[in-house]
Length: 249
Image: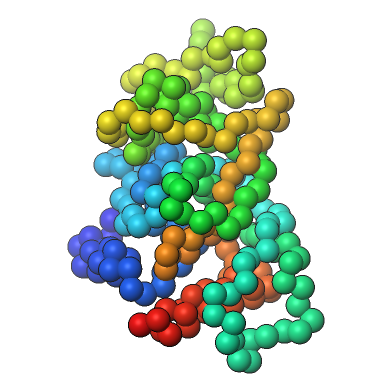
């Protein structure tokens, strides 16, 4: 990674791990702040570099590629932890209204540890590539593996000279088709055996409830891009985190 040669990466890691200043990661920033990541890019040869700090399991590109970017309603952000936001209060603003979440080649949080506060969830189907990754991840979890990182899984099936998409629909009456040979899968980093529960997929659609916003102590993560929306409530929430941090220091 570029920052590794300039000292920026290590400086960021130290900044986050110090835990004394608020940090906000959106989209790719959320991935970097996670402790676990699956669906890493095929061009990443030695695994996704992570800063860490928040014990969440993130799936990269859960919603699809750049051309699959979209906007959807997401839960309203919480009340800012510091309410003394002079000049930022809009009396006409509906604090409970849904927030317009803009998802650009966005990740999703699959699981969060108990010490992580979940601030928002959405129900959405994974893209085909992410669905194949999730299916392989579920197989590994059933085998008792603790998956820290897992790369892309081949979403194409090659047989008799033809190429077709892997079937990612649910198969309640029997096992799903094989996702491909081990040679076609990227290396998986595995630690000690552990139980992880993934959100279950719905029948037919393969949609599942995933997490789109979390907070742990002074670290805030959102899968979407609040800075693109005209709605400033997430920014006010983060400003509240900063002011609360200054008051407690």
